[in-house]
Length: 136
Image: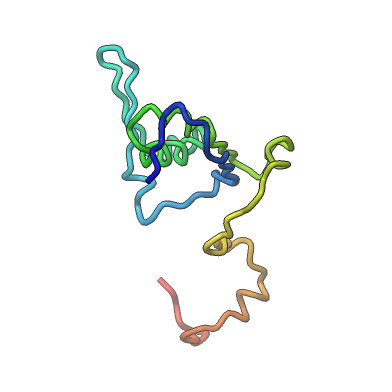
């Protein structure tokens, strides 16, 4: 049996790299909205995920992690141990203490522009259209 107190200083720092390249399923970029209130009357704002990601590429990840943490005073200490970077540029003082790394689950998909003409021509085709066929 273990109890966790807010005053306990335990846990590792977590470094998230390449948060600029996160993916959301389906139309989540256009439909997911994030809430913010300034504390003043009429200070409510709802921002769509794609707009928030354009403002700061780390905010979508930061809000997702914050939402999953327990609603207690320990949340602030845990969030202070989270370091999110939009690219692979991480300060050396953080990288020298990295002890392990979680493997990437899936390969990053490539854009169509990154394929060469040879790779596109050699890709297996389901159907070869005749020369006089017009695609609409």
